[in-house]
Length: 369
Ligand code: GDP
Image (cartoon, rainbow, N blue to C red; front, top):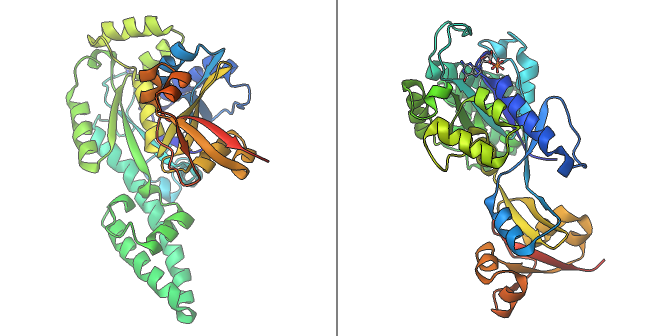
């Protein structure tokens, strides 16, 4: 199953606008991906990767396919969701399915658009949502603690889990997220997290939604979010959701010109592109490439995957019958101007089953079935 990023945030902060921009992007790209199904609450979009352009200049393929990443719209998280307020528990269950979170935060002022809490205060908004996630984790952990308490009377193993669960409960009860729990590397914690999928342990990216006038220079709201993100070790991306939606239909050149006018920066990347790229890396994913005249293509793997697993992304038979992988690093492929010349220069390596695939490797698999 593909990894996905759940979009959360209070009402009226710009979630739907952001999600619409992603959905429109998906529709604009859909012709390239006939094998992807379109679902109303999901947007599967290309990960921008300039390396594909560089490879294409050399290989001149018929088509180019990017890695993709999936976003899921999780509407309506409000204060009290963990007690069933708003759309409550159902939405918390949807977040559980997501592998990382894109938290949209309102950093724009507009008296016509109500803020649910009647004031613009991005940090207070973030804390409302994060507290709901912690409360939901406390509820599921409490149930597990009851079960572990019963089990620990009969099995010794359960006692260790119970101790960790209790320490985690104390941590969550101090309003701290599971992501800052000191025993996160502990085996018992990892098992609990795998089973309960703690919401407050997911990696978070903050999408600070600003007015177009703020794209050129940060306002105080976004400065606060940046500071908060830095403290938490989370990425903060500034975007104007409204503008992102408007930009979807534009060509690359038009978009670059439009962004240059808005930001004063010649090489500005759109907020949406940054969100997609950052989202991909936050999920722990990387791309390797295949480069043939029919297609130049990025394939998505988990960072740390070995060559046979990487081959399995193309076809299960490639994994089963894996023999070796002829590999050229992206840098060498560009430096020598393609496969033949890289091979001549001795830059093509023959890698075996234990090889850990690197981001940007250009690969050919040898296999038999
Ligand atoms: P959601 O409830 O979080 O999904 O929020 P929406 O995406 O529906 O946005 C709520 C309202 O805010 C809509 O009327 C949007 O057009 C508006 N909005 C979204 N982004 C911006 C922005 O950057 N500036 C301004 N002024 N309005 C925005």
